[in-house]
Length: 129
Image 1 (tube, rainbow, N blue to C red):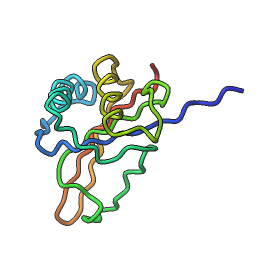
Image 2: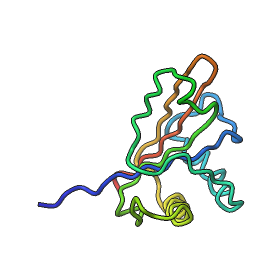
Image 3: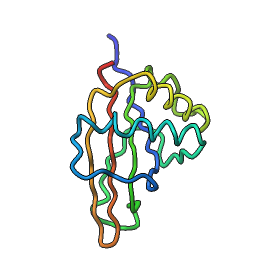
């Protein structure tokens, strides 16, 4: 019996990138792809999380939120080509290869609002490749 590959999640901080009002989920990847590539090429990618898919449930607690924008990439381990023990530089390279060469099967926006912070996470799922 073949088991499904683990889904790895990589979350990047992108608070210096503006979020366009009214953009549809279908247009998220095409809009942000050049910005993600630019961050990578300028070595400005800050990894917030790398591991199994997080639950994204801060329940409005400011100390668990980042005030700004995050990009989250959920990718099967066999597509990403690395494991959980990969070095940060290898994680960045693997992510860049996926962003450059694949299109996500879906994109969505998650928002969490605390007393003083608002975290917006753009989720790109690369499941059906």
